[in-house]
Amino acid sequence: MSNRRLALPMLLALSACQPGRPVAALPPVELMTCAGEPAAPNLPERDGTEAVQTARDLIMLDAYLALRSAWGDCAAKLAGVREWREGMAR
Image (cartoon, rainbow, N blue to C red):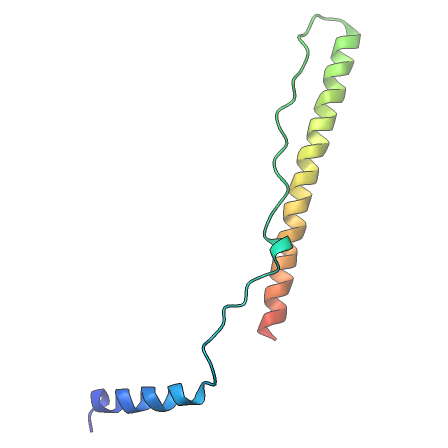
């Protein structure tokens, strides 16, 4: 018999061993959404005074920390998805 003639009986035989339809395993929903990127800060106009520069610096610090926090959230969730996937492979 040629390979083509064996293909259909083998396919039918192999499909009979499977008890049900395969189910796609998806990661937990809470790992699939990252924190949003924070909006750009609204900085006061520069006027050369130290008080305005200090206010600008504090606003930029808050914006930087919010951006870093959003990055950390995504990095942690990506690590969680990777760990979940490795757990599924075992």
